[in-house]
View 1 (tube, helix red, strand yellow):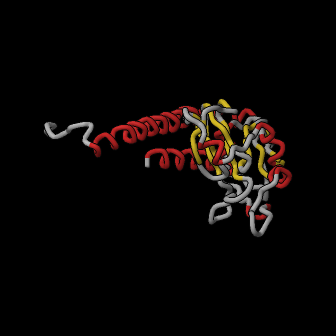
View 2 (cartoon, one colour):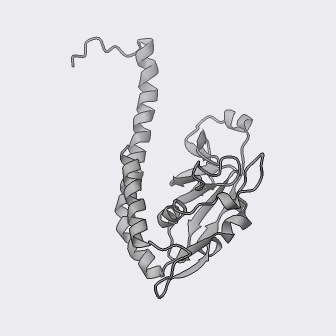
View 3 (cartoon, rainbow, N blue to C red):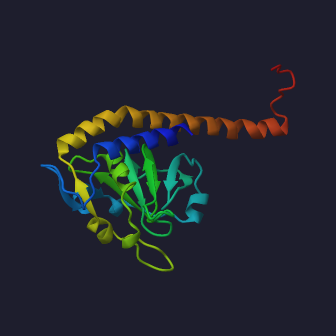
Amino acid sequence: MVNDNLQQQAAALYSNAFPYSTEDALPDGWRVGTVGEIVEIHDAKRIPLSGGQRMKMEKKIYPYYGAASLMDYVDEYIFDGKYLLLGEDGTVVDDAGYPILQYVWGKFWVNNHAHILTGKLGFNVESLMLLFRKTPVKSIVTGAVQPKISQANLKSIPVVIPPEEELAAFNDNIDALFALIRNNEEQNKELSKLRDTLLPKLLSGEIDVSDIRL
């Protein structure tokens, strides 16, 4: 898939630009800090909606996200912009122990099973996502029955914090790449809507394609 390849390219660029771990000797201006220093957490704005509430909605135009994926569409939105969603409870890590992430933008709704993050100290949403993709979090997951990443544990994760000017230069370099990722995703959504609209009409015979020659 095109966007998968683009995200792999972005991850490779990040690893090349910021190759150090918390165990390494760091260049001047670099330091080891914590996730709590580089994220803004917007969880207080979350509002869960029950399945019954969502079923009563009619317009169903705004994405409704859960811990790991898009769950539904709803009539209203509570966020507008670019954000990183990180699973809080339920499905919170992949098989390799890295966090479940969703890169989202535009108008949307989030339930109370995902942390809603933006970056600071030079990290934007994209570079924050690339950092988390190379930061294992399995050690901070609690709960045997219902795995959970609490805010406190999330904030405590040690990370390498580069100088803000280096992050700014990197963010500028990958801006066009992520703009392409977002554009591709929007095009895919439009094609899916068109398919969902036309397919029932084709199957019912409402649209006659018998005269179309290939």
